[in-house]
Amino acid sequence: MKQGWVNKKLIEIADVSTGKYDANHAIEAGKYRFYTCAYNYGMCNTNRFSGVSLILPGNGVNVGEVFYYDGEFDAYQRTYIVNNIKIFPKYLHYHMLLYWKELGTKLQYGSATNFIKIGNFQNYDVSYPTLPEQQRIVAILDEAFAAIAKAKANALQNLKNVKELFESYLQGVFENGNWERKKWGDLCEFVRGPFGGSLKKNIFKEDGYVVYEQKHAIHDHFNQLRYFIDEDKFNEMKRFELFPGDIIMSCSGVTLGRVAIVPDGIKRGIINQALLKLTPKKNVSVNFIKHWLRSSIFQKIIFDFAGGAAIPNVPSAKILKDILIPFPSLKEQEKIVNEIEMVLNETKRLEIIYQQKINDLEELKKSVLQKAFSGELKTEQQQ
Image (tube, rainbow, N blue to C red; front, side, top):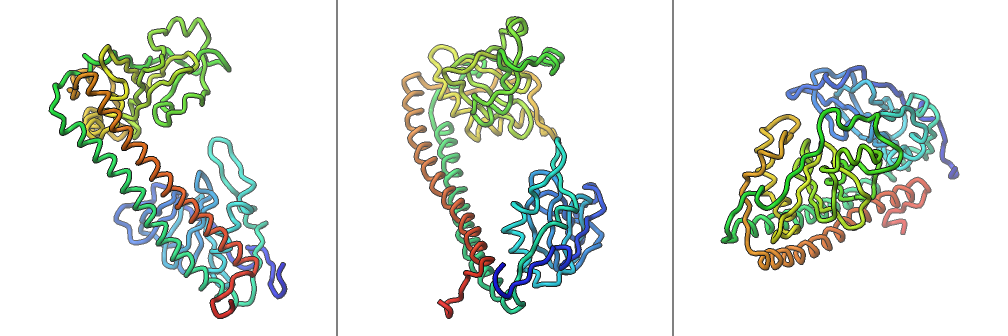
């Protein structure tokens, strides 16, 4: 511990409690913030808490986050509230931004959903200097974090702009071409994955023939496998087998319409009920179809077919076969694909640059915080 600094348990310098409501307590037109374990808060009409507080999710993917709020609010029963803070509150906020995720949440419970307990707070140590020094550190961090936030916002906007420009370009390609239009069902063979009890979980094996899932269309990672069937079941369901060059499409949920091309060298297997398998016919470029399916034109069509349901779903491949697709000659398809791929490669290059910038800024925040709590931060007058 640094000379002149004090070390105490968190519960010695602040009160720690939880909310008492379930998630249904939130209402859209509420007067006060309602913090759950989600990243963003909702609203409600009760205000059990007030003043400067730190809000920490107690379960799920956001365990380790620390939010700062000065005002009236309420909280979900698994959300922890740190208030009545006896040191400079913003100093404690920055301290927990640096250390809480690593040290405070290293012990977690649960299998289906992870969660922390009050004991995580009882064992959390806080080292702090005099109040004027806390205030000095916070002032420097506030200024540094404001500059980092501005730079990150610019990088995020640039990343968004790059993606939107490509989407706009792709839409223009398919809108502006003066081509014949053909029915999707005339260009591809359609097979929807098996429904009902055909693939019960109790038939899955530790190895064998793969059952390809929605995530393979979403993430395009065909080597991440978890479900298998034996040879007898595979032979019974061979019409659902995937081959290199097939396209798979997600058929439900928020990822409806996401597609991927099946690569060479995949392990033999079948699709499950969440996927549609498309096998392009002769004189049809698989990459031309893939890019059309990824365009905003098709994405609007497929969600319209889903009927605006809370969980969008295409119940049958049959209803999709009459969708009209712009269809130039094979030679022109290949020329268009080459042009799209050139633009896409440049888009990906820029996305990598901006994403790295965002990652670097997050690392800079950690570096600044580490200097703050090791006593290395200096003002310009001290340098």
